Structures are given as C-alpha cells and as structure tokens.
Image (cartoon, rainbow, N blue to C red; front, top):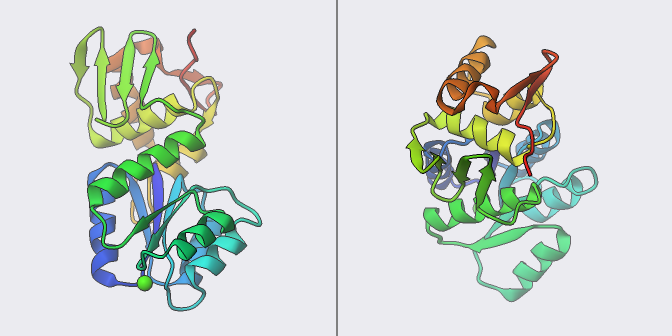
Length: 219
Ligand code: CA
C-alpha cells in the first residue's frame, strides 16, 4: 500500500511518514499543496493524508481539483474542531477527517478502514481458502497457525488479497508497494512472491501469462 502525506509542519510530516513506514506502507511526502496535488495526480495512491491549511493551494483546493479526475481515498487533517470544516471536507469529497492533535494509532486505524472500503471490503479479516489475513492486527494464519511474514511480504499479500480474483500487474504492484525513495531492483518482487509461495503454498498466488499475479477468489 502506498500513501501520500501532505503536511507543512516538518515535525508532523516526519513523524507521520515514519509511523506509516513502520506500519508497512510505502510513503511519499509533500510539504505544500502544489507538490501534493502534483503527486496525487501523478501516482495512484491507496490513500492520501491531507492537511487543510497549507502553503500554496490549500487542502480544500487540492481535494477539489483531485476529485475532478481521481477517487483516491482522502483522510483530512483539521486543526480546528469546527463542524463547518468537517462538513465542508466531507462535501468536497473527503472520505474521513481527523482533528489535530490526534493519536497516530487512530490515524493508522482510519487509514486501514478507508483502504478496505475503497476495495469494497467491510471486514478487517480476509479469508481465502485456509488462510486468514487480519488486516487490523496485520497477522496471517493458516490452518490455525501464524505465518510469519516480513513487512514487504505482508503488504504484497494484503494488496493481492484485497484485489483477489483480479489480475494485478507488476507495474501496479511497483506503484503501490514502493515509494519514490525505494531504489528496488525489479527482481525483488519475484523474491517476495517466491517467499510467499513457500510460506502459503505454491498455488496460493498464480502468475498470469507473465504480466502479473493473482490470488484466485475462492467461494
Ligand atoms: Ca498546516
């Protein structure tokens, strides 16, 4: 999962990006509205954390322009606990909001919910065959036993599981699993898939004609 954080307070931006990375996200940051809009339009993020008061174009304007072309889930950060702000945010197309100061744990939980909703997934537990992925606890169980995954293996698995039944291209995976600071070589994706198959069974992830990967949906 790849997230964009648009926030002009350097300390807050840094701690946000650090917390998101520790939670397994690929993260890009933008310190003002113009860079934020440019990145939001250039990449397909799984979610955007958007501050309202920003230098350059503000969060409202960024959201208004983004909504002309994209449905990326947006969590707005508002400094003022004003009903007017929250109503305006939701009316402009924000998917959720959080009042500053906030607990990082709450922000992470709301982001997970936004990303699930965007994938039309109401439940935090995804059951695929004998594998259960708990997206809230970020754990994976198979036949009652916990499967230990690295952060990257987990995010790859979660992305494929949220889009199960669909072909996910390698390009899409690179866009959603790695951020602009990752200088990952292309064969690493194959290594992660190889390791996931070793842990979850060879047939769990299928390769479709060399173009991408798929977790088949099971009844
Ligand atoms: Ca601000």
